[in-house]
Length: 291
Image (cartoon, rainbow, N blue to C red; front, top):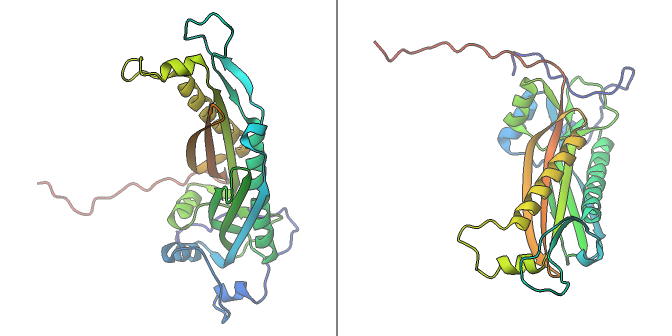
């Protein structure tokens, strides 16, 4: 990228303060004597320097809290399934619903951790955070929620200070190629959708083994499709005119309280275009193996 124009990094509106200066980790990454830390590999670190990104230090954001038990969340039926047995008395036949309150709690937890990481990056004068990693889970039981984000804060050489640091999961050659294509990083987006499939005679019948080999159980298929489609739609809304890059999809299925829960979550870097894609040079053969 040395032969190309410098990247058009996200900046603040005209009149903003210039690039922060000072000592400490920022000076250390630029060749000072004080130590600094980074989560980047050696190749990614070198790639950042070649792009004019000066690593400062490792920054992180953390959230830990309590969420309600799964059985405390309401799932409103979206689809009812027909009876699969011969019983005449009223009985549950099975239905499919979405547990939107649970998804909102997890997405809010991720956003809180992201804001804390960006706040720490802003405090050290960073323009952005690269190589962001995300850890999420239940540290104690299913009613606990833990989200941990961490990455390397960087300063863009010659760029004015932004109003808000940007963040991306990318680093190294992936980030370099993204910039070559005319995009710059914006922020991280996390979306998810949890579907609940309430068991009834429909599921009990198809769980007896009386179905043919390879038979596809419709409620499970519907639950997976609903979880994926809703999570993708939420990711598109989160991009808000940009694009989701380096998207990772996670699907988890569990059974509890006589119901099957299927969760589909998406995590990716939102990017925006700042210039047209540079034309690719026509390759020139340097060796002809033919006659």
